[in-house]
Image (cartoon, rainbow, N blue to C red):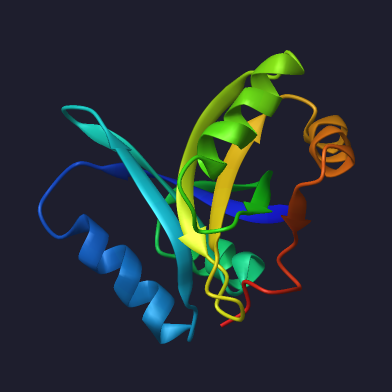
Length: 142
């Protein structure tokens, strides 16, 4: 499992710069992220090098945020591998809430980060099907 930081942030000029500045001050590296916005607020989801410290620093700065578990799956960088994983999830009746990509800093391979219900069961299912799941103590470390 990976720990993901989700930040509920106002959609205004300078917000992302402020969030990243806070992370810089704590020497935290962003390993993967996605931003979903609306007219007034958005959710910034990030896998970072030290999620607990990032969470604490952002709360101290006044941001509403939470830590949650997500799954990271390392894929070969070739045509069709993402589709193959998504087919496996679909065939296993697993609904994916959202996805975004990062990469393994050691192997250079893409890493699909996603959230689904009952992530422990999902991780077990896709591992049995031959996919490599990673955790935040392993290969995503900067």
